[in-house]
Amino acid sequence: MTNIAFIGLGIMGSPMAVHLANAGHSVAGYNRTPDKAQPLVEAGGRAADSIADAVQGADVVCVMVPDSPDVETVLAGQGGVFGSAAPGALVIDFSSIRPDVTAALAEQAAAKGFRLLDAPVSGGEAGARNAALSIMVGGSADDFEAAREVFDVVGKTVVHVGPSGAGQTVKAANQLIVAANIQALAEAVVFLEAYGVDTKAALEVLGGGLAGSAVLNQKKENMLTRSFQPGFRIELHHKDLGIVTAAAREAGVVAPLGALVAQLMASARANGDGGLDHSGLLRGVERLSGRTSENGEN
Ligand code: NAP
Image 1: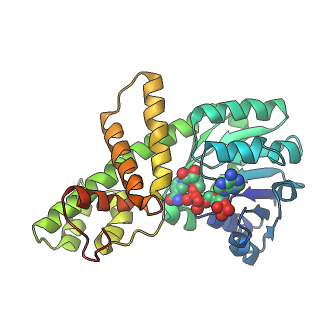
Image 2: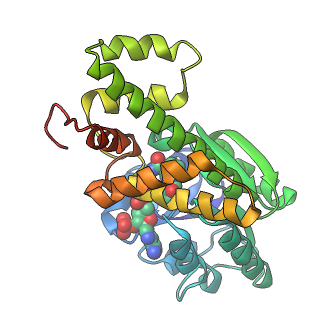
Image 3: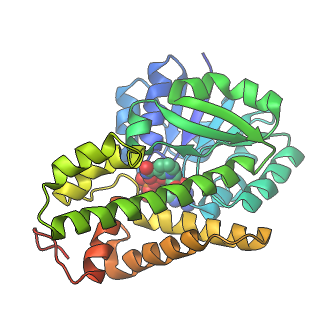
C-alpha cells in the first residue's frame, strides 16, 4: 500500500483516483471544487482541503489538471507540491501539457529533491473509467519502474518512451491523429446522411474494415445521436493542437493536416462549442455544409 496524493479530480482524475483507492492504496484527493472528491471518498479515499493537506505523508503525488499554467501552479506555485511535499516524493503528471514546460518543471523538481514523470494518457473518459488507459511516460527508467504500481492500476498499455518531456511529445502526436480521425468521421457521417443512407448500418460495416478505429467505436454514438456531453472537451483538444502546431514548427517539420484540424477545432471553439465533446466537430461540418442537426442545436 502506498500513500498517494491525487490533485485534480475532474473527468479523468476522479475515476483514476477511485481505481487507486479500490486497489488498496491510501489516497488523499484534492480538487478546487470540493464536491468532485465525493466519488473518491465513497471509494475509501480522503478529501483534502488543500494541496498541502493532500501531499502530507505522500510517497507519490499524481496530478491531472488541464493545461501547462495549471500544472505550473499546482507544482511550483505558492502552496504547491514542491513547497509542501516531502522531498524524495515521486510526482506523476498525467496532464497533457507542453513538452518544454514539462522539461523545465522536471529540472525544478530535481533541484528540490523530487522525481517528476510526465505521463499523459489516451483512451478518453471510457479509458479512465475502465482502467484501460494508454500511458506514455517520459522521465528516468528508475522512476518509471517505481511508478509501475500506479500505472498498472489505471492503465493497460504503459510505455516508457524516453526522457523528461518525451511523454508529452508522444501525446501531442496522439492528439494530431485523434483530431484528424474525428474530423474524417464527422465528414463521413454528414456525407452519408446527405444521401439518406442508414448511417448506423453504414458505420457498423465501416467499423469492420480498414476505416475501423477506436475513434469510430467510441464516438459514433455521439455523432448519430448528436449528444456531445464531454468526454474530452473541444477546449482541451484546442489546447493540444496548439502544442502540436507549435512543437512541429519548432522542430522544423510540417503537419498540414494538423494545421487544418487545429483551425477547425479553433472554429468549433469560436462558435461556442468549447465545452462540448470533441465529437462535436460534427457541428462544424454541418455549419460549413449549410446543414442543421435534426435536434436543431446548430
Ligand atoms: P477536467 O474535467 O476539466 O478536470 C480538470 C480538473 O483540474 C478539475 O477538477 C479542475 O478543478 C482542476 N483544475 C483546473 N485548473 C486547476 C488549477 N489551476 N489548479 C488546481 N486545479 C485545477 O479535465 P479532464 O478532462 O479531466 O482533463 C485533464 C487532463 O487530461 C487535460 O490535460 C486533458 O487534456 C487530459 N486528457 C483528458 C482526456 C478526456 O477524455 N477527458 C483524455 C486524455 C487526456 P475544478 O473542478 O475546480 O475546475
